[in-house]
Length: 180
Image (cartoon, rainbow, N blue to C red; front, side, top):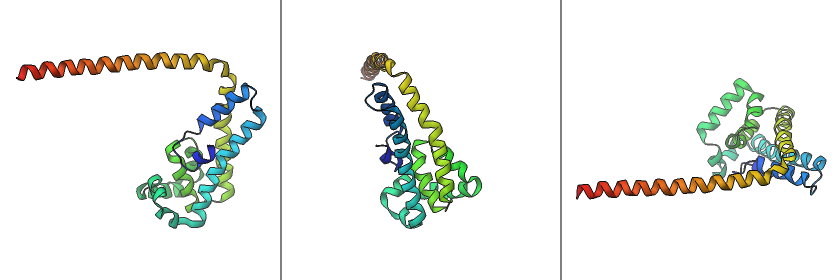
């Protein structure tokens, strides 16, 4: 799942990382194995995107799925940003879901040195992933109460939505009746 998210699938990376933290707390996974596996899963998708951009360059941009993630305008903007800011783009993109895949593919196209790319991406991943994993691990016993609260809020939101639709229909019927 993390590899797919790294390739640009619309899946937040935090979900499997948090799940790994929860399962580690439940002693289904060993935390000291689960956390490095999460980091490797995240970085592997990033490296594949970089490699595609580096080796196939502009040709990869003609693929339809790639153009969905990286339109020409975003590509031009990213290339200009890499010239001006370099690896800061990689560090920032690591933390932005919809931007990550396009930024890493463009890093390869812009021929950012691989060791710089991997070092900055790994540093950014090693800052964010352990936080999500650790919070899930520490607060795993609270998940059941949080889920109960979420379900309670969902019920109130559904009731509010039904009341809003009913009020809108009543106003609409009243106005329509006055016109006739």
